[in-house]
Image 1 (tube, chains in turn orange, blue):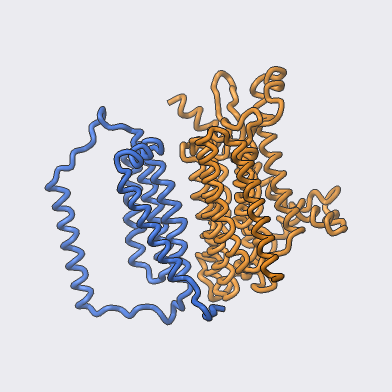
Image 2: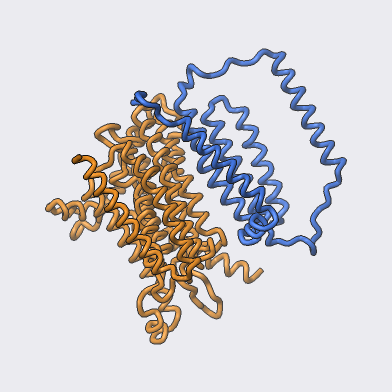
Length: 374
Length: 171
């Protein structure tokens, strides 16, 4: 009984800290998004609240809470409220299986810096991601507004389409690792054997799908303002709108953490052994937590960078890319990875597969161009 | 807390939400209650230590199939398409059939004394991914592959049905 309570308290602390970090990062993502946008467009950005405007997220939060909370007359009231709640819930649940660090020993007891280490870890992520669409769909439908409904339906079809390619990209990781547990996936990648070297194509597919799943530009069609006013959150105001936007930033951070876990070695960083020898394993673990969060923030930056670089796709282009582009590519990647494992040289074969693919695309393009001229 | 208490609570919740699926007037509410029912069933799988089934149940049913259900129902104009209430004779016939089925099912369960798995013979790791994979790709390889062929045929059929014919424009 004693052991159970200790484990329970340790897990509660870990969950609380992860929760706090996620919310803090999401709040400051809004600030950095505006700062990065300003930098790319040669503006200054928010600089009024506090030095360099670092209190801007607080000001935004106060503004969001103080605004009138409006519920449209013909909307379905309960579902209208449930929409943003579900969005936040599903956004926060994914981080439960992300291993934030190696184990830490305090007072003779060892704790893993992870919410839950289940042997279906990556399936949990996949399941929660597939539930993420409910918040948007319910909110969009309950608004009783055509544009909100169209946005919600776009979001649902987009998420379902890109989930397939995402799952296929994850399969190759499972083939290399031989386990569904996120902890084991990270442990296989220790000492620089990051999956990105073995799975460059898989990573490209996964990051494109992550963009689509987070509804970020260039795939932010559910809230495409030139066609749909505000998309699924047209009717939302005050903190309910805030929750939808907040959920998007949380999703960005968590998908960054998942990508770091699957492809960039999780909490691995160069010089683990050196830090362990100099300062002990606990310090090394905490530096690892920093490394993972740093990698996730790097991905958040990539999300923002892409947002201000690439224009939005058209809807049929989006569906074409998902169904006729990414899914065949992911299948090709599965075959190449399987061949690599069979031969026993996964690294060589994956690079050869990528080169072969680019060559084939180039030749195809050349033939097509000649046909057009003739 | 006793594990059996959790089981009673979950079962009550499952039955309640399943009842709400057929009793709520709004089809969207029905779909959402059905999703909740699937979650309760997934929780039952966790109690049975079958985590893989739980994850797959959520991904396939709650995450994909029910989203498509919701999708289709949202496209309806609910005010026009509410089915008319059946006559009381139909309702009576329905209740009689359902009640008979319930009695038969209970009778079957009571007649066949289904043996409880013995404590020492029962392997708690049966539901884990590794063991499930061993069984599926060993003992039940042929049925498993046949099911995948069935899915493939269904998928090809769906693609064929959804294919745009020459000259047809959808938007």
